Image (cartoon, rainbow, N blue to C red; front, side, top):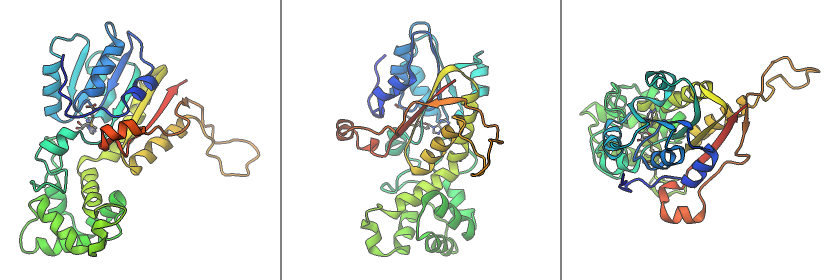
Amino acid sequence: MKLEQIHIPVLLKEVLIYLNLKPGSVVFDGTLGGAGHTAEIFKAIAPTGKLIAVDHDSQAISTAARLFKDCQNIYFAKGNFADVKKIIKSFGIKNLDGFFLDIGLSSIQIDKSGRGFSYIRNEKLDMRMDEDNPLSAFIVVNEYDEEKLKEIFFKYGEEKYSSRIARNIVLFRKNKPVKTTGDLNEIIEKSIPLKEKFSKRGHPSKRIFQAIRIEVNKELENLEKAIDEGFEVLNKEGRMVIISYHSLEDRIVKNRFIQFTGKCTCPPGLPVCICGTKKLAEIITKKVVTPNKDELLNNRRAASAKLRAIEKL
Ligand SMILES: C[S@@+](CC[C@H](N)C(=O)[O-])C[C@H]1O[C@@H](n2cnc3c(N)ncnc32)[C@H](O)[C@@H]1O
């Protein structure tokens, strides 16, 4: 099996350490992408381990299925990692020793999919990671009302010019639909003071594109469901390792992991605990793990990566 290194796997060494894999482990990799992590996880659990590799992008599945065609004990599924319980059941698997997510987009999707994930390229407004998703960026941008657009730009993009951008999208739509990423980028640039394009926070299109992508792919809801379902099917001493790329996702991972450790949620000042929260897991990354300088030199897309891991008790 030879892998084309179009997508460089992020924090690979750390992922393998924190997953604590052994030959025979059963692992769920919910974000196959270019199969960089998948290939190394597969080696670490061979020859008796089982690996379920999932992506909702059928291109990722078909490429990897070709690469691994001679390998046994690796099961591919086109699906949503949020449906982990249903997916593993379909392969006759009930429990996992490892659950791994490297969320977001692969470099292949950003650079080559033609689905309009980057504001730098002029492509059709699509942004669906799963081509069977009925909701696309075109629908969001052309059919959501001004209030709803403003809300998702604020909530998922944390963009201070959300109101102006939403208003200008609606004005543009009165004459013709917003068809391309180029159209959208132009509207955004016209809605902001020039200096914002060069501000430390980066180009506002980056945040607006992120917001639309999160909405189209229901990224935060899927992450929450995946963590809960994945944790439910983890074996005792099973590990959950998640890499995220922006603060909204990292916050979800961090808070959910803290809840699993049974942190008391009683109001302060009560003489005894009444919330009954149980300790179900141990956080094994006391501090969030980020790429070192060497990794960043080789892969600038790793810059925002944050890894967290827990072990089920
Ligand atoms: C950052 S890439 C993974 C790269 C991979 N770890 C590697 O080393 O090549 C993220 C992948 O997760 C997929 N993905 C994102 N959200 C998903 C979801 N809810 N269900 C299934 N796959 C998802 C994307 O389609 C993309 O291929």
